Image 1 (tube, rainbow, N blue to C red):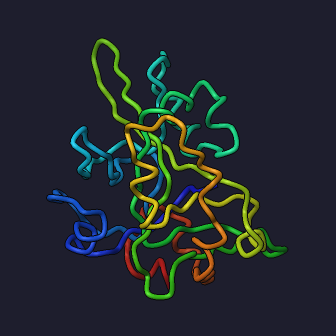
Image 2 (cartoon, rainbow, N blue to C red):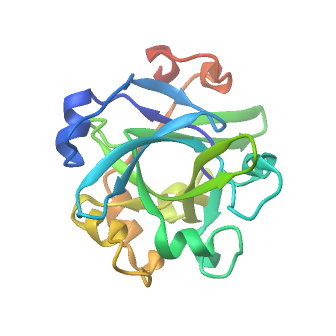
Length: 217
């Protein structure tokens, strides 16, 4: 799964990397938890990219209770086309979720050891994401989820799941609004994760209230 991640790129780096016209209200974040608004990149009708902030925890449009989002922070790549919670978004509302790293916890005899998983230079990459629009009589919520898949050999040493990473040359394929038949399992995760590092960090990251460079120590 992916339940906490990092985005510490500069505003200009994000604009350039994702071909954005502008990026408002951005602040680097060392410890991003579910349940808050996170940066997403979506494709507009004219084919351009736009930065939006969506609630992390997908709320299906048909749900009567927005609380379902607490259980849908991740979506399994293997069943996106089948699950009622995700299949419509998979066809029509795919997005990119910018990141510079993510955290995973490995169970040991002495407790859970957190790892920061990232490229050596902490360069930008993107998770495959889905987004949804939900509303009732009193509120409207735009929400998202991070797509995960079975871990490759490297990540499997600490966890059995990992987020699907979309490489830059594949961004347009994933975002393409004209295509409803994008096979998420066709994106080569061995290539995407090849250069990533697994760096053990302190338990400071366990508390989502901690949001500073010490989370990566």
